[in-house]
Amino acid sequence: MLTKRLARIAECIPQCDVLADVGCDHGYIGIAALQRNTAQQVVFIDVSRRCLAKARQNCPPPLLGRSRFVCQDGLADVVADCAVIAGMGGLEILSVLNNARVLPQYLVLQPMRNQYDVRRYLLDGYRVTLDVKFFDGKYYDLILAQRSQTKCSATQLELLFGSTNLARPGRDFVEWLRLEQNKLQQILTNCNDAEVADKLHYVNAALQFVNAQPCDNTIN
Image (cartoon, rainbow, N blue to C red; front, side):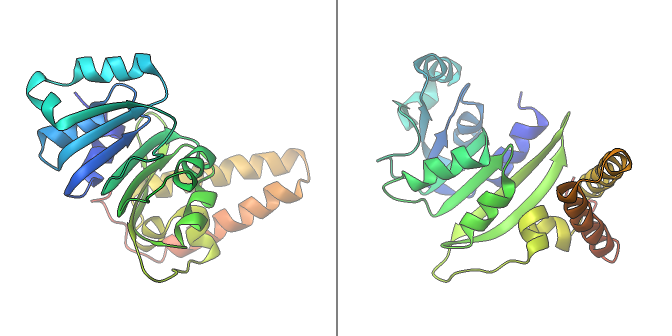
């Protein structure tokens, strides 16, 4: 059974012929895509042979004919319509994309940190269609992007917090903003840190922005 985090990632995968599950670990996301016929084929990729063996073992026998298991670091020469890259730091995700021979049409990304860098990278060649924060034991960011012929633009708030979060704020995102606001305010009571003050400025700006939007209860 998929956790909430994995289920949210799997639900974002668009219909595709070939899906690359990069850093697949147990393979649950790729397996779910096969079971739902979201993907006709899945390439399970992991740098760890042990993880690949685990993914192969978890994959139901009837689905093995639609599966490939590749031991390598990132996409490299694998060509896929869509790539899922989840549970990595944002800079690791960018390394995977920068070293890919052919970039996929769709990206489903779940960066654990450095989300700003990922969003900025996507402006050149991708259009972000979903960028949400949700809670499953802790807060996660989930980004869906599609290849674009034109360079996209984003405001500083969108790069920091995600376009969907701002346009259609969900409960989890608003709660996270308030927690960040409290945390940063407490830090500033003990020290005068310019970087913390700058972060608080943007959190306050984001809260002011989302308070003017209707809360989208369907997101979380």
